[in-house]
Image (cartoon, rainbow, N blue to C red):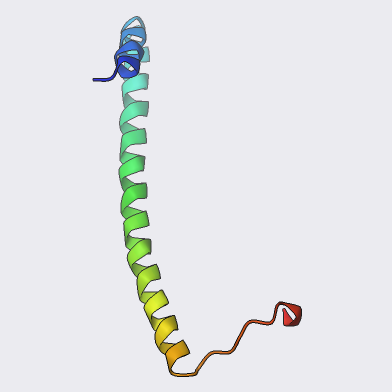
Length: 72
């Protein structure tokens, strides 16, 4: 366990039971959110890779044209 996490737990241990439960609930929710975020990024990365491959195929097939920023 890192020193910072150890210090945070020591501080939280000084709280009453309700405060400790609130900190515990918050930490568990944050960890779950981080896991969901990581999973979402992984899934979107796979989708972006597929879109990139499709764009390359279309470009190689001559189905694209250069972007003209002035025409936007």
